[in-house]
Length: 430
Image (cartoon, rainbow, N blue to C red):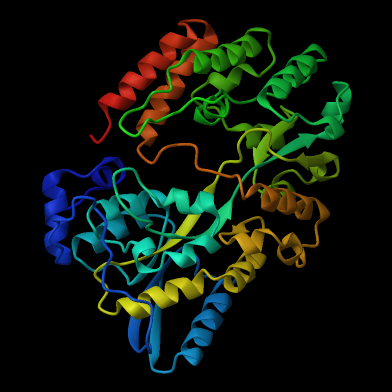
């Protein structure tokens, strides 16, 4: 029996886990699901390993990786790093094939969701057991993203990270009698702004509330065993957004199936506010250059969301010491900072890198992107992944459908959340 995309993303059956264990040679007897492997990270390195990235072999990034590998090999004579890159489309399926055949690359670029499912069946190394002291040099939110309920350990080094800042159309703010100098600092002040702007015929709100907004109101989304976000506090925030919709403070199309997203609505000048990473400046340059002169940014007023890519080590690597050493090399501070200078708008996964925004922005010529990156760097210490790893796309779709019904007034906010939580829990580990 082979892994399917659904089983990787939504939960592995016992039979599937046993199959994977057979492929990797794991006994599957570790009740915690952790796998410390044999890596010690010490001693003279030799031999070869394979390093896999995800859609990063191109004119912009290839020279970086070639120099990175050469430098490592020069520092460690007798080692060979074989770099492979998989295209953006079909990466999930490719990882599945590699996992099923017991041929995961020794060092592999994995989002936290992929690493979670592989950690469940002991296919990736517990980096805490391998070198616990080193973990303190990484962003805590990044480490938390690779730490999973019911599985002891940490299963990915935070590599390149993203978070949103707030983007405002200053011309529309002026029309509404608002100033970015007084930008919202919490959800309450943001909702007040949306109400004030609507009275002047300006739309700011262009999204329904989701888990981020609910979590920011102090609601625990997942209690370790099941979803539990159907509280009175959560219903209050949904009700407040429903009131915004009722008074016409957001475009009606926000609730439509063909909703294009808040960033697109911003570039179309339908709304005066959106959230996006620092790379939003590039999108504006390409899609709406006339907006650049009337766009400014401010810090997120909710908990900064964390978007993350990480580096994991295969638990069944034939050369675990070399694999661990190279994974640490790829994600050390100097190499991460150099990488995000190319991947402008993203942040390094190290604490040190985010404490020195000047190093991140010295190659950025655009002042607006520079400001956004500085704001994002300052937010990294508190950024976190709000959506639990168990929260699937299907769950998100159903939850948003229920919230949309509440926004329209068809059902109450509490009824919407009760239905959403029931659906999520019924489909947990399906």
